[in-house]
Length: 174
Image (cartoon, rainbow, N blue to C red):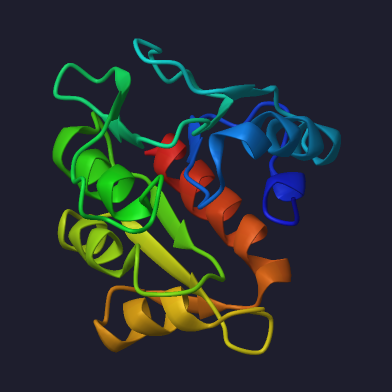
């Protein structure tokens, strides 16, 4: 909510969110985020084409990914991942299939999910951000990304949204 509240109505990029949350609770998350965001927030559906100015939230116990034809889809693989939906799957697919560079941000959470995917985004030329320890409820995921040198920036939660906006607007002007 803190991150999304920084995005202007005319934000020129699609926003994809993968949150470790059971599918039963995902609709409530979508509703809650919509109250904080100037952009429309909706559940991501298989077959969606991510559109600038929209927020798509993973709402399945499967993993959300960007496919090679640049459509959103859900996949059960990797089955062994204890994190569902996995942000590593989303980040890795975005690094491989996105039509343009973007910004990836990894927020508070348990475990190391997201670290490898964030590193793939950084290696692909994306701007990458990890939440700092002082504002993380659980520093596991951001810490793992920082240790892998996957994050270009390490920021407190209250500055992540403004950094994303600045980078996306800078890219849009090019």
